Length: 256
Image (tube, rainbow, N blue to C red; front, side):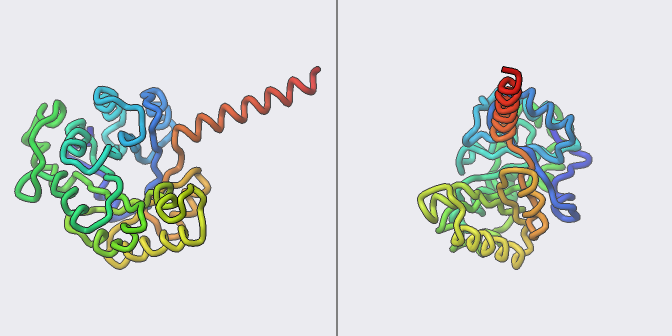
């Protein structure tokens, strides 16, 4: 869990530098541990499309050192999904498929205790010493909302300006599906991303985006995004296996 005396994510939001995250969906705690050892600047645990159970989530958050921001992409935009992630000790949430400013504000309210919001008090880690946790929560808990549909793009200005929303994150895959019915990146997709980024910059709200590899991640940060994905466990392991298989087949061919 994050250090309640020294939360790091909102400080990074305000002061920079931009953040490169490692994204996890395979449900492997060992891969998260390896990524942290490799120097991951932040970790995202994917509960929407990932293989993590509730107990896996608790264990995964516990593996991440307090100085490394740990976010959870929650299953949906319900208070229950957000509460599970924050009760595990995550420093922030990323909420999928937000299409209006009203939805964004509702997700922020679900992430904060009264009087800001209506989050329920609970969770094994927060209740271990709830006084300091409660005192830190208002300034520490970080709320990200995902724009990943054509409707969300059209409402990007309102979403970016919604109260207590700390950053916007572009879900590039679903955005491509919404715009063209496939995962192919098109000129319309790039234009939509630029529109979202511009709306965020006008509102003074950091904008992140999903990227498929380290080169793309660095390129997006150079364009003005605040967060990008350096590596995700599915692509990283598949790429390593594909490369190993190719090298083996090539080597075997030379010796046959």
